[in-house]
Image 1 (cartoon, rainbow, N blue to C red):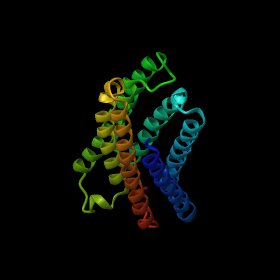
Image 2: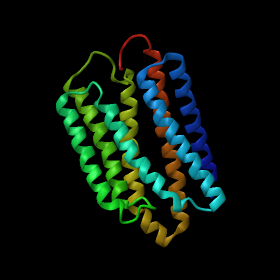
Image 3: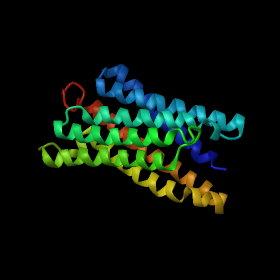
Amino acid sequence: MYTGTQLAYLLVLFLVASFSVFLWIKNGRKQQKFLCIYLGITFSLEFLMYIFQIYFKSSANFGFLYNIYILFCAFFFLKYFNKNQDKSLIILNTSIFSWFVFVYVFYIFKNYREVNQVIGISFALVYIFYSLIWFYSKIKNPSLEKITNEPKFWIASGLLFWGVFFILRIIPRYLFNKIDEEVLIISQSFFFIINIFFYVLFLISLIKYSKNHGSGKYE
């Protein structure tokens, strides 16, 4: 019932991933390659789950793929935000990731086929903490450069935005599933719209990287 918004989300994700590949080939910048890998893996997984949804009527039995993806994302953005970061904040980011891995390992074996609610909330909190730590680093080390010119500003904003809305969605999700399936479908459709906005912020970040090509900034 939410195929329309799901297809719109897949289309936006495909376009952003394709644009990242184009910029990487054109400019060959390390950070663009870094985001290209993330976007490529994300689109491949989402498209695969969509195919499973069509052929098997549900992708629920393949939730273990999302569990693997969640761990990958937490590690990916740890590496992304730790680059050129203060040592103390690198330690803080790494501590947050270590805490998440502990929670992940504790709950994953209870039911690896589905994304555990605690793992999901913990994952969203990791995104929120990563972004807040990055914003704190900019306050701690102010620059004359406009913060909106920094590609990581848009990524950090996206993670913060996504993490907050994911928590708002996942907590009542199980209640809605028991009471009203239609409300659950509306919730899922709304979250596809959130995802679209999330990857539009990634697109802006890629454009910022492209504009700063050759300047040596924001590597």
